[in-house]
Image 1 (cartoon, helix red, strand yellow):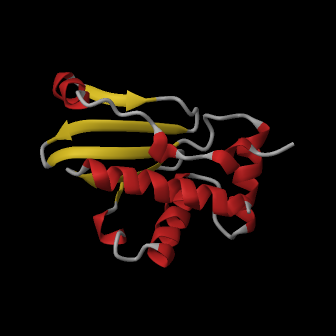
Image 2 (cartoon, rainbow, N blue to C red):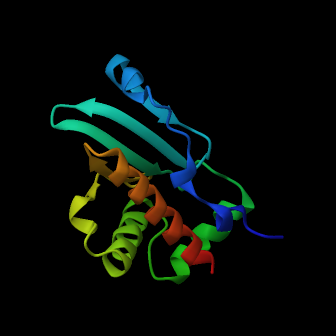
Length: 137
């Protein structure tokens, strides 16, 4: 059976035109994928466009296979391991973009984000999706 993460395209998540109204009220979020928490929130520094990978939220066989692939690639199965993998993937494949990426990971959550630009967020989501698919290729 084919792993569903081979079809991951977070960049195709619908972000409606009035998403900033939700951000101004509290935050915009999308929980379409159990392992990915996508949020847009206003913080002191500006608008934070975040993609949090929660490797233990999705208990499916597909996520188990994905975590195993991460481990075989030499990374720990936790938030820091996922951060190292994703940032390394972006650095290798999209080096000009890495300076736009911030991280805020913990042991059980990999947090990557960009600030202030929706187009950069779409790129980040695309690169995260590429990196996930690459692990399973």
